[in-house]
Image (tube, rainbow, N blue to C red; front, top):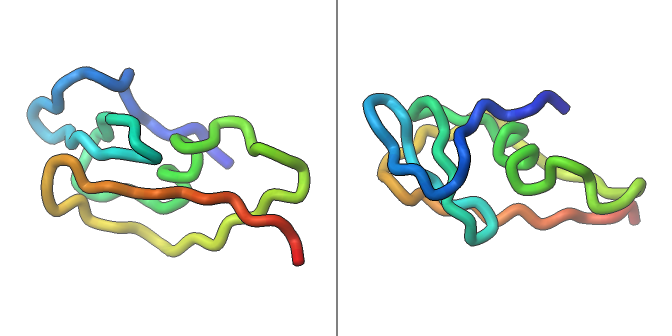
Length: 77
C-alpha cells in the first residue's frame, strides 16, 4: 500500500487542504478527494497483524472540514 500524502496532525487546513478525522485523530489531506486506501494507510501505516484485511471502495469527496472515518481491521474468516 502506498504512503498517503498528508501533513502532520494538528495543523490547520489551508487552501485546498482539508482536515479530516481518522480513528479520532485530526489529519490534513491535500485535496477534497481522498481514496479509501489512503485513509487506511493513515489509520494503520503498519498493518496490525499478518492476517489483517480491509474492504475498501474507490474514493470519497470530503464535503466538509472534519469528515470522520473509522477504520477497523478485520481478520480472515
